[in-house]
Every structure is written in structure tokens, then in C-alpha cells.
Image (tube, rainbow, N blue to C red; front, side, top):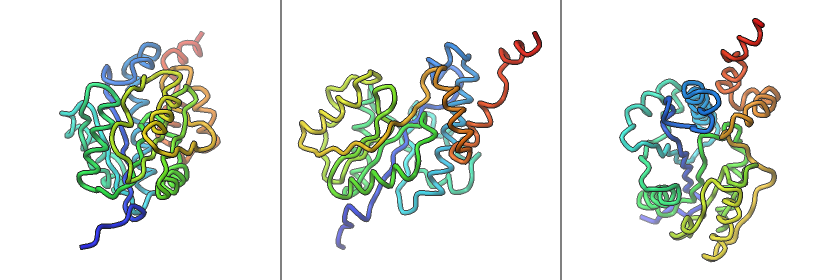
Length: 244
């Protein structure tokens, strides 16, 4: 049997923590409270899964989750979405830091699909478009890496071609203002050509990210309807101010 070429096999790996109070979005939780922060993380994850599972055809979809023993909770969460969401297979995260977890996920995909181009994204970027993912796959099909930087210095998408080997996630300082640049430099040191996608992506890390996100989603409500609905609901603080 002749192996498939890399252009015929594509994998998308979506990283997510379990969206429960006290288990995710610690910076948001410090300002909004753990319940509100978890609700936003949950809505963002479900929006991404629903939209991408409907829009990305012929792409192997993986939800790489943490904590590693939360498979049943994630299965129940995905069951809340449209039937297409069930396209996401579940893979537990494995490693002490994000670099080790990315490397482990890449290895898992390679074992099952050695000729696959792989794109990594996170659940905290509900606006990420399928067009950006398609553009990244076009780049990886040509044997180059693709990256979409985030507004805070990180990145919201990383695409690796099938000929990419290991070591890409070593020696990187995660959650810093230079994470994207360090990732690009690391890829180039290891011999990969890197294409930066135009513009900046937006992820949800701080409470100050929410008002600009709400403004953008009001202009493009179909991107993340659950997140939009949640952000438009008045918080207890807003309700108290309204009664004063």
C-alpha cells in the first residue's frame, strides 16, 4: 500500500484545559471570579469546536486536553455541541510544560499519521478563522512552517509540515512577550523556513481582553455565538452599578 502524500493528510490539534471553576484561566479568574472565567473558557472552546468541525473538511481533528484524567468530562462537553463536533478525537496532554506537551502531541500524531502536516491552536482564541487554518495548511503543504502571532507576543497558530522533526519546542520561554519570536528562531535554527501569517490573532488571557473581544464579535457574531452571548450578559457587578 502506497503511503499518502503529506498534501493528502492534515491534522489539527486543539489544546484546552478543562473549563471548570478553579481549573483554568487563572488571570481572568482573579478579576472576574472562577465561575465566570470558566464559563468564558467553556464557551470559547465550544464555539471553536463547533465552527471548525463544520468548516474543515478532510482534516483530522484532535482535542488535546488537560488534566489527563478528564476524558469523560471532555466527552460530555463535546456532546453538548452539534453532531459534527464528535469529529474531535481526544488526546491527553503529557508533559511538565507547554513545550513538552506540544512535543508529545506531535509525536502522537506522527505515530498514527507519519505523513501529516500538523497545526496547533489553543481554545482561548475563539475568533481564529478556518481561512487562517487553510492558509497555514497551504504553507505546510509546501514544506514550510506557518505561524500566526498573538497580540501579546505569543502565537495562536503554529503549523508544521510533515517533514518537520523534533526539538522545535525546546529552549522557549512560554507566556512571554517574545514567545512567538523565540519559536520562529528555534524553527529556523533547526532548518525550517517559516512563514508568518498576516495580522495578529487574539487570545483571551486578561480581563482587559474581553471588551475589545465583545466589540469584534458584535461585528462578526457567527464566529463565536456562545462567547458573544455570554459576554453580553450583565455581570453581577454591572447589575449592581445599574441599580445605583
